[in-house]
Length: 136
Ligand SMILES: [Zn+2]
Image (cartoon, rainbow, N blue to C red; front, side, top):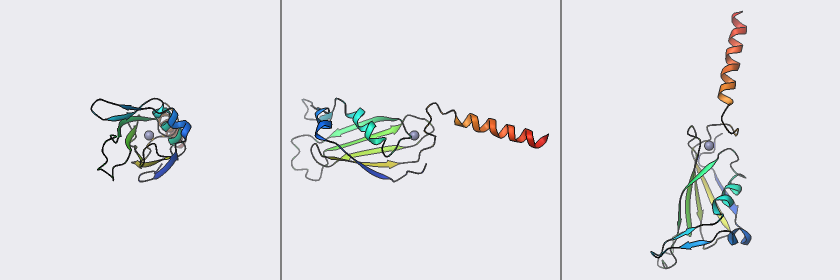
């Protein structure tokens, strides 16, 4: 599946944000918490039903960085849990508690959607069977 460079976008409703509290640390840093990974995963499935993703980083613009007008509210990343797959996903939310999440895919899906990856085995067996038929 060729998805390298594909972009997608999903919506976050007010109800979604109600389930995503923003943690503020004494240092001024902030992080999304609560159900955000679950919500993101279920929405990412609409554009990529093949990968099971693991979230890697999650940066929320700190509240008092007014001078950085260009800074986006949220930047995050995820990658596929399957070792044979090199899909990485980038998430960007432009505005504070914005309605849209921009998704960018890097890399291609290197497996079927089947969990456990039993497909390669089945293919090998099929090839063997074909060869046997030819030699006999
Ligand atoms: Zn994958």
